[in-house]
Image (cartoon, rainbow, N blue to C red):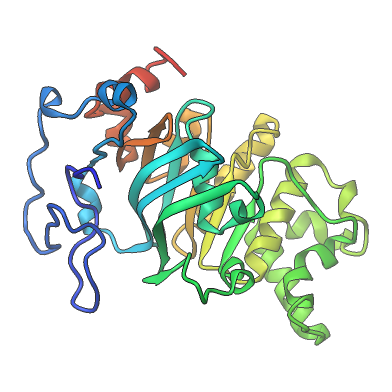
Length: 314
């Protein structure tokens, strides 16, 4: 594993620390001094030599409790390597944004968290991911149960061809829940949580396909939270929406954080700056820099990060 410049997760008495190199205890007082830019590794060297990259992790992450831990994770599509030794910790109850140019591996990494890439025959992986300390890729993991703990919201809204009500309670239906009071309560709670109740309540028995694009996306979020997952995975949830609908989704993300740990992919850097607390910049399958969003966008440590956020490439 390439050395990580600042470990994100402190040691834990119950299990091995997530990052064993340069791990710093949580009670260390002042955060360590950041390295000078000229002392940082070169992404260009890693690309030229076809090697992994020593991710620069900002020390603020030491203070966070991680819910999802990604350790030395690599992925191949056949002979093509898409991810190179990704190690990062997703803070509990916070919004973490994955940014980077098209083809850098953002969506591949996101879909690996709930094992959606298992459906692709040519995929193989190395490394591990953990949810609340338990391996996501363990031999005895029930993938269906795992996905119940992770709600997924896709780039394009995908309501089912059924009523608004049945869309929301679908996770409970497949669990065998039939109690009408429970179903009604969950539907109302989830739609309120998705800021859709006032608009949807008079139309609960109507087809969800009759909703606008922004309403459909909020419905998909309501369906995702109805099963009370621990993590929400969002793959460019606003890219197909107009500015008004996008604003509502962003307001919703702001309301949901704290109750849920949110990992989202976005091509919109302004959106990442508005809604996320932490941002990870990826480039050609490598995780380059990971830290507080305000620091990433105003004082990035890596020149490649600065080049991307200032529009020199992307």
